[in-house]
Length: 368
Image 1 (tube, rainbow, N blue to C red):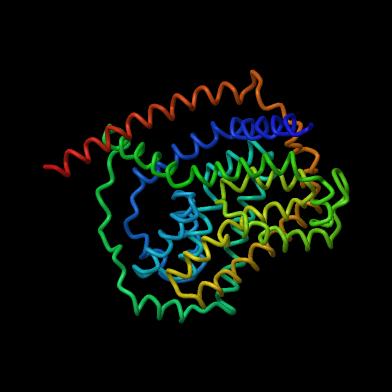
Image 2 (image 1 turned 45 degrees about the vertical axis):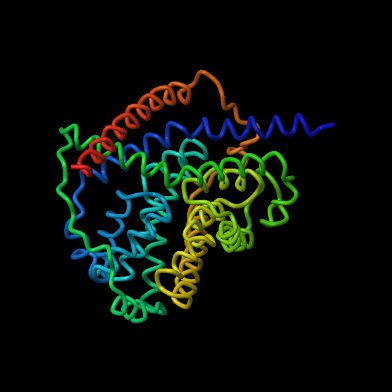
């Protein structure tokens, strides 16, 4: 019987992938929680009021310093839209909040290498540009405006006072944000790591090579494969049900299996069109606009994945799939990952303790 050793390999790979990205997750969410606590959100709507380049840049910046959870990003995007931001700027905010956040870069670096970090952030900017062009050319901007006019948003609360970074209360709030991000996203990360580990061990390379028109590890990527993989990558993501950070282990498994560099990027971008997200868009904007938004995002993701793949391949920067061999990674050793995990496990426990203090204060204040 080979089931027991295969199961052992699967559990080892799952545990190893989680260990590999643990410090990056804690660091990224800690920075995200601090930014949410200490960076004021006042005037966000006023500086995102149109679809100009400057407005889209500001929307991208605000998104990049906000939550990386796809569902939270969609909710915040709708909130700023309902308050008066342009729909294109609101979508740019959502894209940046899932694809230009620092924790995603850390996880990509630790699991897939620096090329993916550079390509992810450069591609994220290109994704916003392509989306904006599609919205200007064929986007139902007026229909979105009609939705806003017909609805009354209940998220009209004023921004609360921003605490000082030198205050303990401020860091309690940052810690509470840190734990909130974890609570929203841990299931997606767990699903992503478990599915990725199972795929690495159980799915034969021949399947991926057929699906992605791949010739195997180390082979040159043809123009046809670049195009096909960029088109297929987001579609695979649609049925994966996993958010952007949770998508990274899956992307590593797919890249290891033979998907092209750009196809893997397009897959990571596809977290915004997974089926649960499409249902969220439907709830917010209606069936027709949700479908049109999904199509526009899909086209933008495929175009971005292909263009980035082409540029990196011509420049000689695209990594070979054999460099991300998840199945043969040495996960547990006394290397920088071990020491960083020890440090950031301590940081995470400290933030958890501070968040409990914040919750206790909030509970007391509520009863007074």
